Image 1 (cartoon, rainbow, N blue to C red):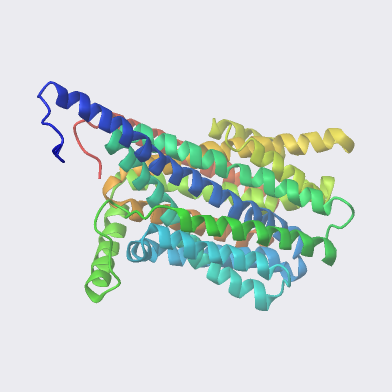
Image 2 (cartoon, rainbow, N blue to C red):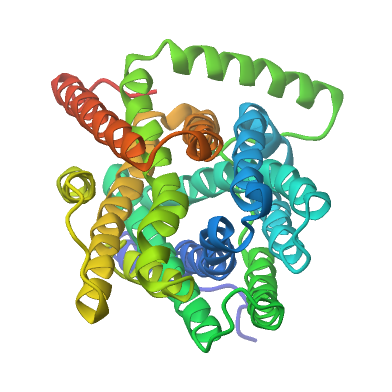
Length: 427
């Protein structure tokens, strides 16, 4: 009777067998890591194409008592406060659960726009502030963890993989402005801008799309933030998270690298708020109408992933010089051109920031991405609250000044990192 065990392999055969075995395992590993990046990117695209388009319309649709702009200010103020504890919450929940819960806030906010009042938009904005804080910390932590696992499995350069994965995510995410605002343009371009029927159909379509994006989050693989054992929701785990949070915030603010990155983060928030509120209200709407917000922001999104400092400075200077905007199709092309330049700068900036934080703060990704959202959302909130009380030209001057300052600090940081010996690990 034949033996049930396989015959012994010689020493010469072993490497060949191992290579054959690894060739079978490798595609599975590759699918596991890259699949999660694809799912994460697509999920965010579907959620934010709806939210982003709805946000762009706030300063033009909900104008009574500045409801739209004020609700966004409350949203980002809430975002700022909750970002302080977001890293702790993500550690306790795990990045995947944080992503799932975080998506519910965006759905609720868009739903509140079906009946926009102080009693619907303000509570939805407060809840979204919490959800936004954990979904973005969860996103940065999850994507960085996925990239590190991929680099470890295939012995690749960690920084390169983090950059590649962030490039894919932000490249796909950048499409949300293009697609979402094309939907807005299509549904509001037939004279239905501002009408109850037109906006209702628009927001119902958005809710359906967002629901599918939220469901995709359930298909992500389970990962821990820093490749450690996951925190349990217990007294010991919670206390550990509180201590870790305190250390994280204290060490981050005493780290020269983070201090040099903060101006860049603050500028990223300012330029986003400028596009969402000021540019759409004072440049786009007077020139080509409310429905034109969709086409202008679609151009912004189309060029979002295609550096940064130069093209956005050009836009600010053109607007400061009050460069005349002709009527007709030439004026429309001019608006789309300005929006495209702003989109180029935003896409490059966000990719750089996320990859930079992932590489510089390997031991505390949750804390680093929490810092990103704290400073970014605080700046956005200030712009939304201050916008009704300061002139458009003042916003442009502040943007230019912060742009120059943030670019200088970024160059200083780049020189500092370049001088650090390659053998010295970064925290």
